Image (cartoon, rainbow, N blue to C red; front, side, top):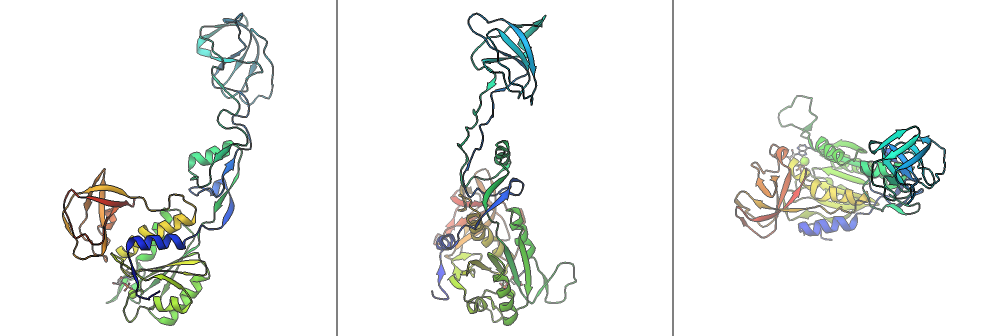
Length: 397
Ligand code: AMP
Ligand code: MG
């Protein structure tokens, strides 16, 4: 592919999707499976409930046409009791919520609707079959599918699997991620700035964005704008991660060595530039199994590329069936003159179906990005957007 081949935003999304595969399957405990996606469907090893269960504190009865109001109390069963008596017609037991009902029970009557005198239960309630009984297997039958492959392991899903006695599930391995930050001018916050220096912020910003999505296996390497040092760092990173994110050094300056080093390391370049603002010089490639996203160093560009492309790839990698970025349509609250044909992502605030473009759209600025909860997507080609126009929006928070 031509080294300078520039793709459209849609092509870039498509290519990232094509080159991304799901991670390897692994078995993990329920404790560690939080927010992951099932790699295999799970079937229930038991009936749930496992036995006919009382849904109330009250009395389990065996009624028929001849026995409707008065029952002889023969026993008491608490939640957890193992006894398993049988009721003759006209007999009842005292019972509590969650306890197994005796054999031949056909209703449980709430204690509020009963009186007991001399071991005789008197009922002031309508008797209907199966009243207040949770039938064995009513929620799920043994062998039935409890959760499908691709299900999100949210708190309810984890709880549900635990009710079935399941302790481990198959998920896709969370990826190892490496962030390589380039730039001679960068110093870590906490040290005084010398003339010409700025604080390095992309590593912690991307790390935070990753952590918010549950990706915590992240290594950070910092490298000077030096060809050999860049190549060595990238080589080292490539050997140790599934996703390599690189910040800066991918543009056309004399000291941008990332592209050259990646190609020298036998990286397959998928695309090098995207017809977008911000983030035009975004390189995407693959080396062995490692996906490589080389992002422009400007902080707002790097973060936008993360939200639009990298997050979608990560989601696909961990088996999220809805890995494609979700969009909504909203009405633009400002007029906007786009100046240029590239597609644009604008930092914005989205409230209900109204979206407002924030000031300070420069790719070097994060001050308004910090208040944004959405990116407005303005298509390639279209130039003038008027207030009230319906636009496509990527929610980011
Ligand atoms: P580059 O893509 O390396 O040409 O960098 C573009 C701009 O982003 C320059 O003004 C850099 O100083 C700035 N920049 C690059 N990397 C970072 C970073 N990690 N943190 C903050 N600013 C950066
Ligand atoms: Mg640089």
